Length: 142
Image (cartoon, rainbow, N blue to C red; front, side, top):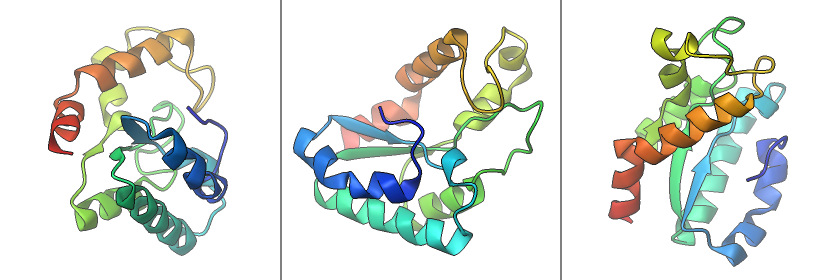
């Protein structure tokens, strides 16, 4: 896991990711790229995807979850990520939408603030990724 990093810095770490060759990389960009212009963010996202795809590492993209009490659904570059997923025909999970369901939002304190999970939020995240059909499909396809 790498947190607190924008896509520009993460792109510089691609050679290290390739060396480790994880079984699966869940990509969740957006929140730390609030000041990255949309066109630049999109270009960097395509570059990141191209480099990792060539390495044959399994990739699964996610829409970053943010506190639904404070932010609209399409904040933090999620529109670009949705368009990217549609154009590249990749699996994209809308993690934000899953956590925005009333039964989930009302189940306990998920966030410390707008984007940082509590321990409970981290457990919900782990459960979500482990149980989602898209994750299983992504692992089987590649």
